[in-house]
Image (cartoon, rainbow, N blue to C red; front, side, top):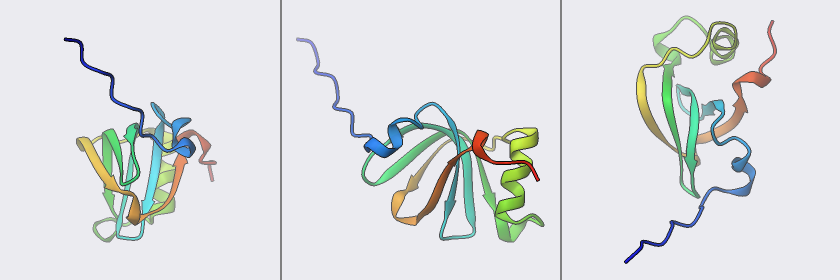
Length: 99
């Protein structure tokens, strides 16, 4: 018996970002850079992820995002799930302007 395909639960506003490298800013000391592979009403799922903790670094979130735009994402996780309730903003990495 064939299995039915799972319904696409990606919020409409995020569909255009699927497969793109994005920057996710949160209300914590963490920001995330990676490829958006899935999203639903509660979580974003990223692959090839750079989890960046601001308190452990000398660069602000903004400076780190600009640096990543110039030199690329420094992967330190295969995948990460991010609670949408903690997300402040989402941007495509390619949309970040150079200083």
